[in-house]
Length: 119
Image (cartoon, rainbow, N blue to C red; front, top):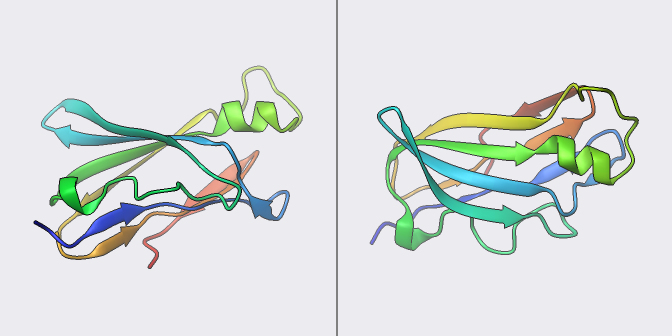
């Protein structure tokens, strides 16, 4: 069994706090197909309660995290646009080391976001 796992953390940089109750979906890319592996929601700390991809399912490959930013921004009362500038935010990334902890955080505001490989 691999030792690696995948986590995320979403911070609302406009409010200066964790993004609570933001829906996150994880897909594994297999050729042109996207296979849904998990759907979770962030907790009060902006993290998921468990790894998005735990050790049991962890493998090298190409993945995509999709953050439901528009629904989150609507729910917290961020000024709405029609259509909203940010809706779903896909982050496609590769896992090459099945023994490592991969952490993909999202720094979010209504008009921009950034990510990086965290620890």
